[in-house]
Image (cartoon, rainbow, N blue to C red; front, side, top):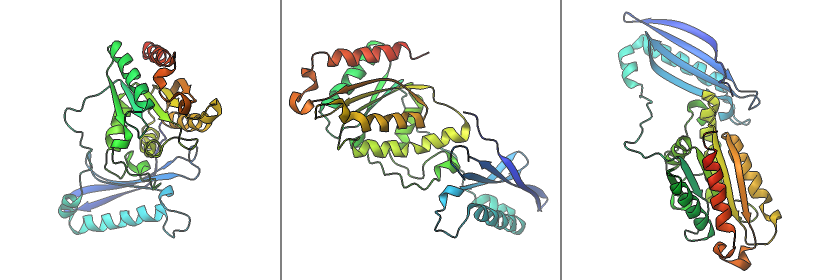
Length: 296
């Protein structure tokens, strides 16, 4: 996936107090992926330094709104020009630095295991434990994330992540996206809830749109591999059809290559996945295979 090139829409030099500032407005057309989406970027450059930056995109504004992205950014350009002409020092001081602050000493793991069940000691926790143990046997670091323990807001579909590559919400999802970015293997452990994934897992999947937006903006693929381990109370593989569809879409969206899928049904009757004679062996074998292929 190549990064989409930006097109310069306008460029203007502003002279204020002996300094020349360049107001540059660009547009990036993402119509091949999202019909009608254009990301507009306004920058003020002084010498080699970007002193102000603002982005907006056409998907931010619903059809019922009278506001349009291009008009918004053109208006911002006019405001900034007047502020520069009036008092460039105050303007520069007013601009917030938009540096993303990385927490210190955050450990990275090569395997991220996402436990999507709200039951901390249920069958999905057993699956996650087997997967983590097998990674450890291969001297590969693995982290298990219990989504139901984390306060994560639902995606509101604002599309502002396509302006910055990050979500507007600052919650525990920031750490999950960082863990996904750092990991080389993603393992999803999930039960079937009403023929689909539990709510906490669906919220995480939706919030990963910010990670997808970052990939769209930068043109970088993740090159990761993914595994799906799922359990269902009812008997029959048809109970997993929606699970498979949702997880496949999730992995495709953030460029994770599906590399294995194990589905265990009839758990209402069997109760404990450890009672299925070959379940542990299958999980460990799937982990061994993906770990061996990690560098391919």
